[in-house]
Length: 333
Image (cartoon, one colour):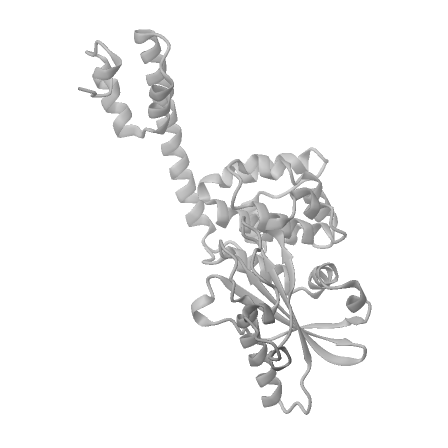
């Protein structure tokens, strides 16, 4: 299992320059995009994120030419629950690291760096995007203070439909939708059904199976092994409805070398599923017996039974045999 599945999906998707170009064309000003030579876009090696922040941020650095000049684009993917108010300062530190690397490589002049933040918390971005806004500048000091801003793609501030309508590939739309929605939805089947058009679109693209494997691995890791069967069944239903024949997710991941940790997770998920299935059957039986004995049940009783596990259910079933009231069943004095 991947310790940071959000970062893994971000890097797997946007380390591919075709998808990175789509994201950059969307988030950067059109006049600047028009001057960029995307045929020169390349991923550069290295990461500049502080070690203690690696669970909250990950990054990618690109090089390309703008008006024939060497330039860098630095994307920081930020997924903590609240916006980092010091993000401009943090970016400046990372940009200095990039420039220092250029100097170490013998650069005679430094390339411009365009900083970009991709953010996907539920709350949306509420902090500043400008470095100079971190200061309370006295009159006459602004010219001595660095001025820059970062471009922001705030997934939390956009509707689900807006992401699905972006003028980018189906894969990029599905990646962004997954980052935006996968953590918060309670019903994974409902989530996947909302992605029907995106899933079909991804499967029509080159190496659609590999792209789907990345998304399914991400869902599996974010939602947990207990939901694997629902994810697998739903995706296969979606594709079958369109006349497509799709491998099981397990086969898909295995065939692409992404199966590490999957079998253990599936075993755990099946065991959890079996245990939950047994408990659910016991809940339904106990409720049926309670209704036969005491009539319509209060909501509080139904909720208590619905939240109970096998040991409690067994105890209540035994107490039901001699109980004269619901209070005696549940051990209320």
